[in-house]
Image (cartoon, rainbow, N blue to C red; front, top):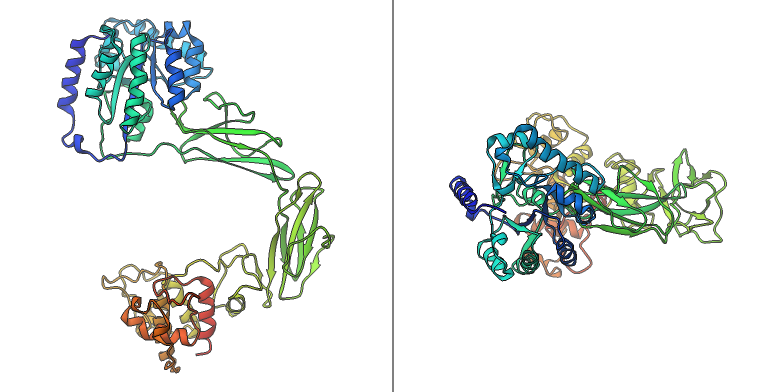
Length: 569
């Protein structure tokens, strides 16, 4: 039982110390923490049943002597994701105890809770009767928790009265005090859960309430609430589970938010804080059901549980590599057969079987698949051995800009991005086009220095930018920046190329018909003539829907076309 006088005194202190403006602090979601003292007891199981049905999480400040009498209830609450905390062993006022007795009250409770749960945890502590002083706080060895809403359910027997008292006082960030040893309190709590959820509250544990508000709970301190303070962190997202065959064996990978720990099971049972902790990919049998959650704190800070059944697996695709015109294909799993084609089509059951390295002629696409006796045929994987003798894993012979990409790569005008990949669909930027045009011009010496505030003199494209600026090929922005990493738009690319063509003395008189394009009015004035010229000369191909899309970005494939046409200027 709690003393009203003590509560009112502490509440006054809290209100006095509350920072100005806290009531109006922004919040993107209302949170509240229901807490239950003095249990577990004979009514706690009914409460847990209701919480399970409503997916609400609470905090139990349990007495050690009660936990010893009801260990299965403590374990059930913990396994369900509720927070287990300490209310000491025998509910004695801590302010009147010697240091040795206080330690025994705290440590004996922790030992009982660890035994009931099956693992060691750190437990928040609520001082019995709300009685504490600085000496008590310094001896607890853990953060202490008070409350901000007390319906005094211990001195009334009406569930409706308890319900009304809480609903009249609760606010975003409240810590609510109840007792699960009273039947009417449990009835009121169940009604409160429904009402608070209906009002937009998310019911969370004390640990999660404080984490979401950016509050770091420290030993030696006591916490009354977590009212809005400008910080509103999201709930931990459920982990993502994936499985693939590695070496012919199903390998499971689980990923989650940085800073969280992952706990999982492989038999379909619900994971708990005592389940296996994920440390890296692990093997699993076909048909296994993997379930996992992640947690910032496994005692009161869990995500929802994710689930995946290991089924319908395909063997992993083979790995293709080319060196000196010879293609080598390697299966992921020993014993897998490899089928391949050289015409770009997907391998079929009657395709040639790979037995030794294949001598390639330029302009060939090799496509391969692995066949496993247990898991069937893999997805196909492919590489292009281009006419220029380059290997591409993301450019096909049939792609619209294949010839330009191969030619620009061969001429040294453009580079890949590593791993035999060109990334043809990736947007290019302003720094890249300046650098390429500078290469086309033969990398002439520059006399000026960089004049843009966001480009250091040692920047990799600094000389190219100085040359382009000296020749009036490119401009910066009104604020004195160049913004080299900004994606290059279609109208910017046309204007830059138009100016370059004029510097080269090329004929720039051709124009596409402006009325042919439905969005001609969207073109900025500086770019209208250049974009119509670039479209007429097919340096830039308009989309097939009768639009120019002047603000659309230029892809690396489109840039390769522009570069190769610019070589003709």
